[in-house]
Image (cartoon, rainbow, N blue to C red; front, top):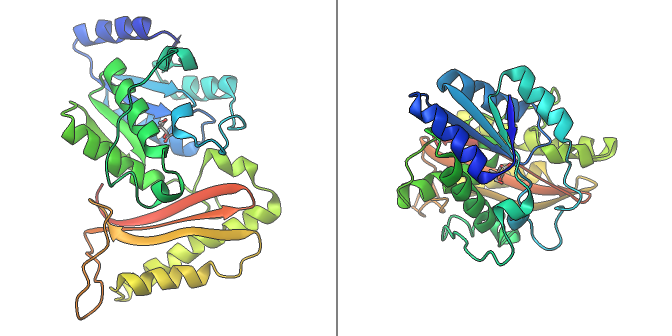
Length: 289
Ligand code: PAF
């Protein structure tokens, strides 16, 4: 497994594989890898000749009072996990390699970046779109792999790629959960045992909503209220948002005499909470990203 930190070097390496007719699969990450990332890399390996994983804690997607400095970093552990999995190349650039002094070009995906998580993290998705497009331009992958835990991110990247005519197939793979149901996230390491207990109410509230939908509930407002009830009065936990929106446009469902009826093939049910200082997100989707 090669570890490359410079853009020209990684481009040369990729060009070499392309010349041999090999397909390139790409998994962008911020490191602190867990089974969720590894499941992306495993699928990537199965579907492509060469698997490239990037590890870059992207400052542009953190707000001024967010956890950029304390975001978990453990390159050696990440490296050994990826090596064991048979990944071919880690792209591990420094901050200045991606954002040299004076850097001033950013990508904005309007609307999709301003709703849900974008309301409380107004610059986040511009930072994500910018780094993802840069990485796509550097690696030029045939396929790129994202987790559905960050459903909004996957929807937004898919739209960006379509509208900017980037020649890459975006794959969004299922959420991987811990034994207790909590969606895997690099930020879970911040949780104390009591906070983790509180955090479990998030997947549990979503399961309740899903069960109600399976039993026939179709009104977005009522689905939202099932989740809000499940998250009410939980010590240590505050709700950022609970939203039931169309999966493709992240918009509210039209109001009809029968209520705001969801579409069983195009719905995202998503929530974000803060447990202590840690922000956690989770969701389920009806349909395909
Ligand atoms: O999902 C992430 O880890 C990040 O948002 C990504 C896609 C690697 C961009 O920095």
